[in-house]
Amino acid sequence: MIKAAARIMLEAKRVCVFTGAGISVESGIPPFRGKGGLWNQYNPEFIEIGYFHRHPQQSWQLIKEIFYDFFGQAVPNDAHRAIANLEKQGIVKSVITQNIDNLHQDAGSKVVHEFHGTASRLVCLDCHQSFSVKQISFEKLPPECPNCLVGRIKPDFIFFGEGIPEPARKNSFEEAEKSDVFLVIGTTGEVMPACMIPCLARENGARIIEINISPSAFTSGVTEIFLQGPATSMMNGLLNEIRSLSGAASK
Image (cartoon, rainbow, N blue to C red; front, side):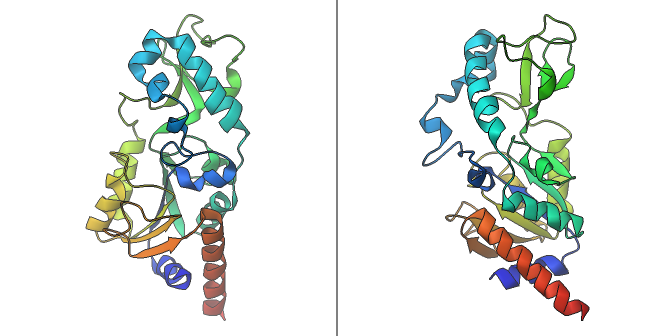
């Protein structure tokens, strides 16, 4: 199955990688839903946009604890690095990620559409300036805006009640229309509207290769090749097989 997937990717004109929380689990970041998920430990109301406006300090205490003190320690794993490697080889053209952890970029991927935004950047809701997380002090919560000094700072990822950011939304759906292979990794396929993207790709003729620990909402309906297992081992196997086939073809 890995050899078949590798051959499909090598023969493709445009491969897009679509990732969810499962790809970052082996970097120490738990998924939000399901067994061991964050929403089993925390009430997600703290990242509802209405709650954030009403209770900024309480919201920020958990935001800092989860997304910066905890998630901020994570580093890319072999799956992230394999995708970046395939981009350097010209096989992968882009990554669409539902994750906000910036691990694809840290691994070296250059073309990344962050469908749900990113925790690595913050934005002031008053003066609308954006800042790298390194520019913001968390000593006082909620943080102060370095530009206007009075504005409310918010992580630049979507909260419940907010829309998908542009141009990530537009770019992601365009990839579903023009890619001929989608490599789907570590997503349940249940989060709207992100889950529509691989389905749209399939409707437009793309071949779907899926890597997941267990079957997802995509597996029986749109997936052509299902590689069941951890993202790191499956991606290492896929990368090695692509190298092997490329080497054989060049002889």
